[in-house]
Amino acid sequence: MEETPSPAAPAGAGALDVREQRNGRTCTLTLAGELTEAARRPLVRALTDALLEVPTLRRVELRLGEVTFMNSAGMAVLVQLLRMTAPRGVEIVLVGPRATVTRPLQLAGLWHRFTVAEH
Image 1: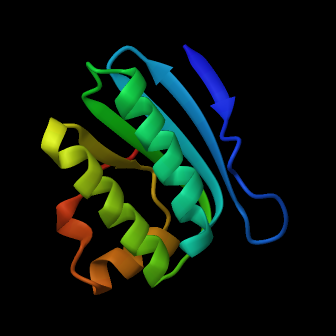
Image 2: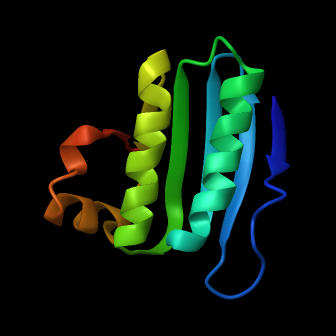
């Protein structure tokens, strides 16, 4: 199992910290901070790297328990991740999302597009 912070994760207030861990056919991205437009680059980069480096990848877990804020741009990033993985049949799983993530997704009608796990 390998865990690395994303080199593209911005520093400072409001930033999103992305930590990546790979275990066989699963890639886990642990997010902490704000899920906004600024999160697009580090998340897309981490997912692209995983898709390119692990041809047998079947599951990407987004651990969202430490996300403190999400806006519509953050929702768009999550949808982009779904679109990136769909052609290869890779499942995106939202793990432990707080109300800061679940409520906007529910209000936007996007909640049903994601698999959700408590842990």
